[in-house]
Length: 231
Image (tube, rainbow, N blue to C red; front, side, top):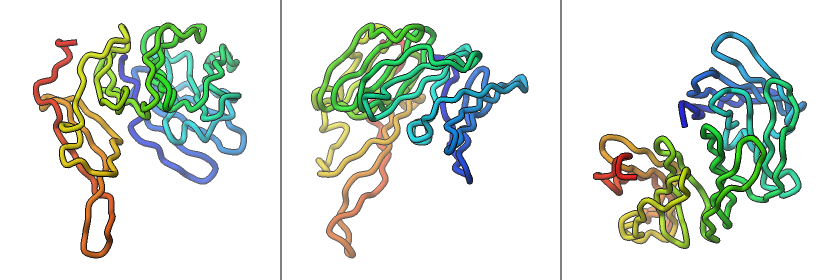
């Protein structure tokens, strides 16, 4: 995957802006009332698609293909499912009726799609065909970390790194490493790969004087020796 990441989402009256790190795009505007999505290219041109899907992309962003020609929208409801639109023509290219769609990452010719509490899917970007899957009823979120690699919060209870190209589990991490103090409430909301290794960020339960229960932010290096070459 080339540069294709939502840097920030800014909510304003009538809609919201997405500022993206993309090889061809600079930002995306989504309008609540009409459902229109306008893509702003770095060359100054714009294209608008009527996708009627502000709820999803206000939370997860709008995945756009590396060539800037397709955008993808997911939904929690099965009847809407996963949809792929042509930005150039404005039409829907395909629709896949799957429920509980969360993070979607665009690669050169396929998508890595998380269907909550069911599977990580590899889907053909051109026609919506499911090419491969890793099933798990505990999977909730995925995080892109580098190239074709994602970090998944739980495959049958175990956090792991997955190669989305081969759909192979590259490395698993015991809960004793990810959640070393066995906090009852433990949420991962971001994962980064840097020279320091794999770092997870999130919130975990703590006790304090004012309340029996509270959530406190944390960051934790779980794999200082990880590098992309080992995948």
